Image (cartoon, rainbow, N blue to C red; front, side, top):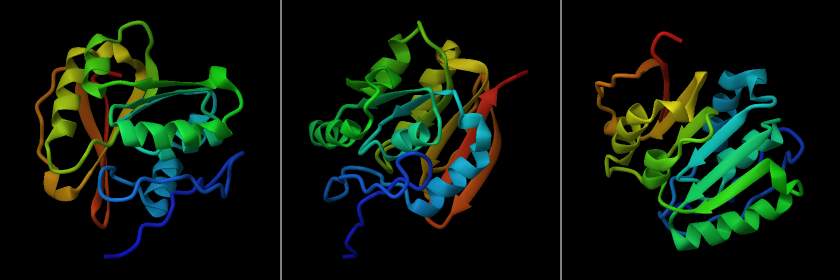
Length: 190
């Protein structure tokens, strides 16, 4: 079995920093290649944005967003072990007003959160359990969680992909990088 390398921050103020990671397969780590491509697609729009990192795992994607200029990042992680690693990784961010960390179920957060809209929502749940579909359906029922011109980005294995009928979101792009597929959604008529 190939040993996993610790995730690192690719660009921005924390560039080159290695994060602690969780051994085993409890998290769905994003490779540097996929993360770099993701943030190249987002581009300069990350500056000053709000970013929801649901199913945060080690926090690699949300911390990358903050490193590149996101104004606020909300981290959601339910797994106790992942949460502890994430909490440790977040000690690098000295401005505690620039992020929030919830030890909570992402589905519950999506269903019940109504007082803040994000510019980007990143969903990367545990693989092969159709959890991304459940998250998309719940977000479709609570579209106020995303700003009118915001993006919902889903990271899955390509074999997990199914077209899902939604009332409020439309898929506008897909990018495949080996065993990772990024799906991009926006609100309809935005």
